[in-house]
Each structure stands twice: as structure tokens, then as C-alpha cells.
Length: 348
Image (cartoon, rainbow, N blue to C red):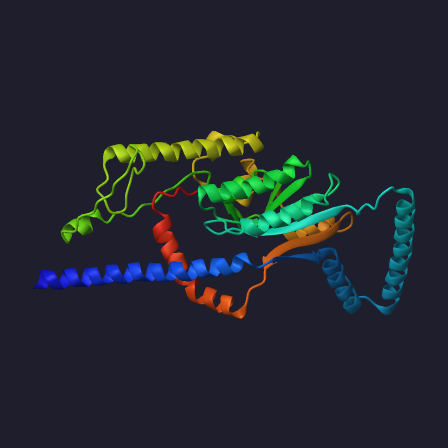
């Protein structure tokens, strides 16, 4: 009787779990269907204007009246001179040319790098107007994730390099694993002193419930065609041959990762740094993982005098119902994603 009761409880939990997945899947598919019909919005934020406004606001509070008059007189003179120069260029040019631009993109990556959908739109927009005299500046934050997802994200950054446009990537917090794979494409990587970088390695974690099923006398069957269609499984009994094949696949992925980093960071000792370890900014500088110790804020301020700075941001408008639904399902979605996607998905 006790055994039947335990089996009934286990079965009830399993059915509840499966039903929850089905319901959530239907809801997510419904959401995706709605989102397909929505058009995204490209937003251009004038960071030069914001930075100058902040500077002017502080000066108006701190400078004396005479100093402010002197400043305003100087600004008017500079504006007249710039306007005159712009008219001269416009009159002599066959086509209108933008002043030197610094295009800013923010990328905060999740495990599946779903943010690449916005990244590709932002890069496409920039490439439609950018020239070799401009620069793309990416504020990157990611601890890595799924191999194919971050491979696509890195490919988007390669589009910038292929156009010959300078690319600088800034890491204020973390660019590890897949995040560092993106960062290494840059012509220059700048890092905050205590930002985390590196972790050039691959990991795969697979829970196995075979012993639990055996304990409750539950059989699990899995049919495949192809010797290595499935090497390791969550519910079946794994063997040495499957483990060895899976380890071989992980090693092959790591080798590809190392080759990719070595292609863009030629002065990097790849054997020394591709151990899966991570380092802080100042340590990463000594290992040639980064080029400069500097925050993204300091870099933007340093460029203010020579370039116009504009942030490019692509987003989809969301209804109130979508926002409420997302908040309600986010915790469940993350938990299920980690459990289900961990099955044979490799992670940077």
C-alpha cells in the first residue's frame, strides 16, 4: 500500500509537471504569434547632447556670472565657426556627408542570447550610413550561454569588421565565455579594472534520473536511428561509449572556440588563457585579453570633442497585457529553460 501511495504521488507530480510545460508552451507560442505581427521601433538617442547638457547644467551652478558670460561668448564663437565650416563643406560637396560619428550599442546577453534579434537590427541600421571614418562602440555585458546563439551574435559583430568600420567593445562588468567570444572581434577591448573576462571553455550539464525511475520500477525507452543520434540522456542509463563521444564533441567545440579567439587576438597566448579560467580587468590586461583599462563612461567623454555620439536602440513595443504576462511567467520560464535546455546543449 505504501508503495502504491508513493507511486501515485510520483505519478501525480510527473503529470502536473508535464501539464505545466504544455500550458506554458501554448502560452509562449501564442505570445510569439502575436509578436510576429508587431513592428519594432528604432530609437536614436543623442548622447552628445545629453553629455553636453549635463556639463552645462553643472557649470551654470558652479561658475560665477562673469565666467558664464565668458563661456557663452566662447560657445557662440565656436558655433558660428562650425556653422560656417559646415556651409562651406555642403556647398563644395557632391553629396551630404555626416560628421564623424560614434555609434553606441548596448548588448546585455542572456543564456540564449535572444537579444541578438535587436542587435542585428541595430547593426543593419548603422551599416546603412556608417563610413570608415566613423566608429561603433558596444557596451557589452554577458557571462556567455548557448554555443549556436553566441555564434550568431559574434557573426553580427563580424559584419561591422567586414565593412572596415572601427569597432571598440567596452566591458564594465563581465564578458566571459560566449561574451568574450563576441568581445575578441573588436579592434580594441577596453575594460573596467574589476570586470570579469575570459572563461574560454565549454561546459555541458545533464541531470540523469535513471536511478529514480528504476527505484520506482518505471521503464524508459528511447528509439534512435544513427549510432550517435543521442549520446547521453536524462532518463536512460548512460554508458562509457556515450560519455566518451560526448566529451569528444565538447573538446571539438572548445577547439573551435580557441581558433576563433586566436584569429582575432593574435598576440594572445591561447594555450595559457583557454583553460576555462576568468580574470579581472587588470589581470586580463597583463594577459593581453584586453587592450586598455577604462570605463565606458570615460571613453565616451574622451570622444565627445571629436565625434558626434549617438546611441542606436531597437525595440518592439509591448502591450500592457504582454508585460504582465511576461512578469508572471519569467520565473517559471527561466526554471524550465535551464532544466530542459541543459539536455545536451553545450554552453560557452
